Length: 104
Image (cartoon, rainbow, N blue to C red):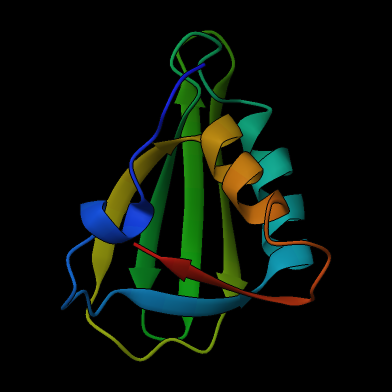
């Protein structure tokens, strides 16, 4: 049986990158943008800006996908990449709540 570290020991305690979002809306946007993600890396880029999150992916075979979702975020800009399936798993693990929090 595998053992995993507590996320509390992995994430910095003074992390100021927290965003509250409509989980259903963002999950749907991720699924749409993921349609054009590279099938091997499944890479999805997130660009977090004041008031919005922009999702994008690209594939040399199929092209690019971009979608922006309005969110109540007023922190510093941040650009990060994820395997879209891991991100969906994380957001789905939060339950069916309309508002989910995500620590980046």
